Image (tube, rainbow, N blue to C red; front, side):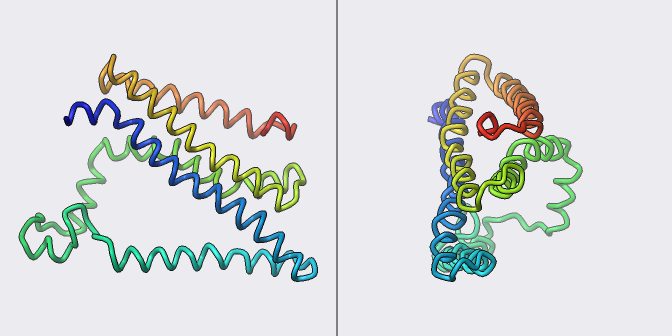
Length: 206
């Protein structure tokens, strides 16, 4: 069963990650386009106040979600941290020891660089796409939010495709195949990012 999970793990984790990342796209189109436009219309065109009020909605939503998870979810894989520790199921270890073991581990730094080049770029794009198209291509805030929505929602397909490819090469080349695919995709992503940053045409940029 464990082997079967490994063979489809890339696809499963990628789709789950894509669904999570698509939330940024929904926030962009809801807050940056729909809610902002509605508030600005009702505030007689006051864009500054409309934007500030629009940002209160995701902030309040995040607070409600945080309170829900605090109240109803476990805070570690084995259950609630205090109960697990009291039952003796967790190894006694200080935060300093945990931090030190991570810092001296070469794999931690390799993953740090890889994550910065993949998810780090993704987070930057999710946060900056609307502003980028607003300032570089002179699009309205509403239109820029809609464009950012397209980028965010595309994560479901893009991550799912990457996960599927990862599973395909794993079946044939095992873990080494996944590593080489990761290197290849990050290099391609870097080249595409350079091209995107130098592009001046709105249609080609989209």
